[in-house]
Length: 204
Image (tube, rainbow, N blue to C red; front, side, top):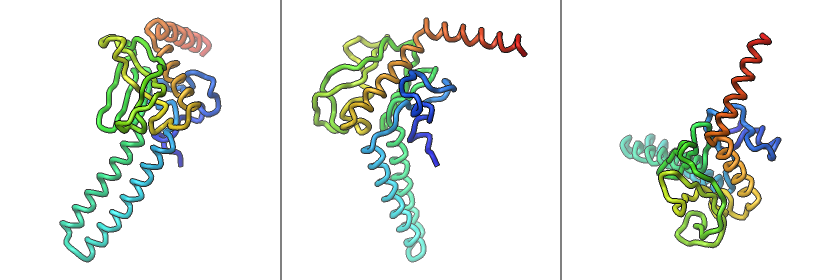
């Protein structure tokens, strides 16, 4: 059974060269697949949570209910952390650009986005303090100076380590969303949609 927070839509897989493959632009989408490092760590965390849940059942049957409740709460915390880890990344929709980190979620409306671009800069290796030279997809906002671009994706993050082609595709997809949702382009798209709606109503 496909999980929506793990995979992009099949339309994206079928046509990688299409900039905006989704029919429903109102829904938040992550236009790339999470990397094996992220999925692997989350899977190990869920496996650990299953053992902790089993231990909670054993404790409830043989020991005190309060101890079992504490162990059960720990397992729920591990599950929540694993699911949050799977949601970390960049999400896009007609409403804006959403950067989900492990602890914080920031949403920037497209009207406040000046540019989304790929730059060469030191990046963190798997989010650790160690930095290496790599590429980063950054967003420049109206309310911040251009030199303070926020890194959204990097070539050495958990999603794209040793997957440079996947990083390039993800960066192109996010940049395409940014270009499509510039105010002038959005107005043109809305005008086309209105004309199509009028034409459909006339034919009906």
